[in-house]
Length: 371
Image 1 (spheres, helix red, strand yellow):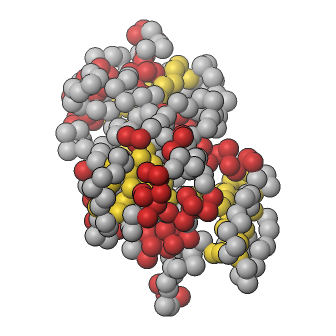
Image 2: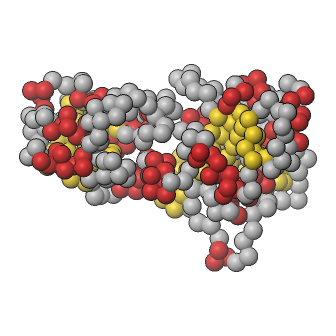
Image 3: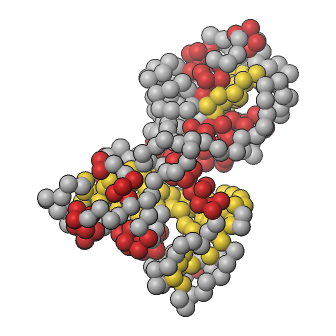
């Protein structure tokens, strides 16, 4: 994946904050393939704080970030070295060996980990193993703390609350219009923004869209990126089951061509017994998210439409917003607002984005934050 990574290389002198920032950037490189594991990055520096090696967790079941970095350096280079990692080294043996036990046997002097692992199998135990070996293992406290929580946000919510993580991606004009009431919506944002959306999709287990988005836009809803080969799950909000009937009768919809049938789920309140497609029967949106959890779906990205966005906002179920704003004004007379069905009776109840980050994808502005 072409997520931005600082241009540090082996031998470069780096500050502690730069080392942890680099570890965060490296962590995102595994975004497409590590679920349900967390994103983790690692940087090892020598006694002079020059980079020895870097690593990241690239795929579920593959080497953890610490092991990936350690494999790139000789043991004798590790004397008095410091290891920076975004999450506490694991203590337990699973698909991969314990990173904490491996570190304990090496001449590394200090480990600085970004967050204590919320997994009860690991929490505090990885650091304890390292400390028992006579090394210094401390949790990072500094200006990057919130960024460390962001990189691990899906995993943290999964373990802390036993709930799925829900994000929404919105493309709109400056005045919040995602298209016209006539149905015209292509394209409000530019090509650069649309390319970045494919990277965002790769971070999540499933995409979720409403029936109207399918019928009006006929999107493909897959991941089109040269470095990503991921078959993402697709959830279609179809409470009445009307789209499910049409999908069974015709192959006119693009999503039927870009997704394997086993990766398509129709969320409906009216099961169709003779359908060939997978269906998720639900009572309300909270019930639906619980059904996702039982299907091993740990994160979802909502991609429209207006009623779907508003329904999840009204239910207070969205954790993060990805907003792409085009430098254009459409107007409310004929425009369709992405929050057209969102209800706020008082300004005191308005939703506020926290830990805002912005980026330019010319000519658009990208804003993201947590709710």
